[in-house]
Image (cartoon, rainbow, N blue to C red; front, side, top):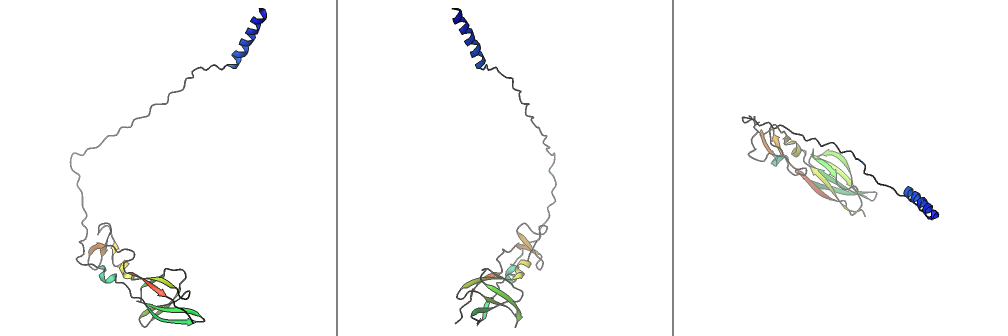
Amino acid sequence: MRKIVAAGLVLTFLLSGCITVFEPVDTPTPPPTPIFTSTVYVPTSEPTQTEIPFAPTCGSDPLTEACSTPTVGALSRSCIKKVPYILLGIPPGSTFETLDPGLTCKDEKVRGGVQQYSCSGQQLYSYRVKVCNPGCAAALTADELKCPPGDGFSESGACCWPLPSQDDGCVTYKVDVGGCP
């Protein structure tokens, strides 16, 4: 019997070392979240506002003449060493932009009252150029002190009018380069 009791004691000591005892651990309580309060100021009288008067709206469209679409035309076609060329004419002072990377154009200056550009590209292809009247963008100036947002001020009429879009006063012209024999 002594052997059984001794075996029981040994077994008890062995098992007690393998069993983990969980004890509750005190975790710190997070500090309370501060509550912010604010004081609302309620005026006892109506505030006075100084309204800045805008210039009047124009009676007629000041962009009509300034934003006229420029005329573009082919003046001549030629072939030099089997390379096709086209000579384009536009109003002097107009802006000229090629919209397709395959078209190469060179400013040939003003001749006979026409701004000329010689252009070349791949034979039998059509390309696009954009020609704009620069007077359209300059006709009105954005002035938030004189006109409401989105309107521009016309110096000539001393009035406000909606600003032109980016393409007002512009034309996209199709350039047919042609082919060489």
